[in-house]
Length: 69
Image 1: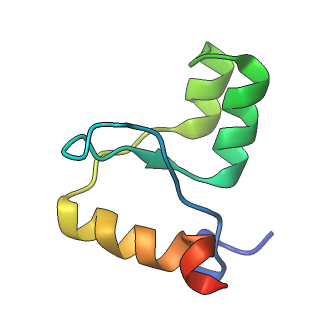
Image 2: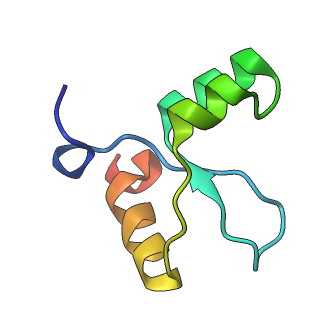
Image 3: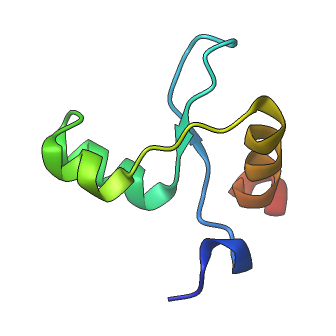
């Protein structure tokens, strides 16, 4: 599998609050939907990371499939 920096992995924003920037990739979204909540398996797979606003915007631009299509 290619590293995420080499291809778009999807960018699913998962907060309805505009100032609460949260997102994960398509693979995380599929697991979250299958599990139905943030289970231990999901948390281990997701490996959540805090990033600054600038990095969040860069990740959104790089991995959002809507912007790439």
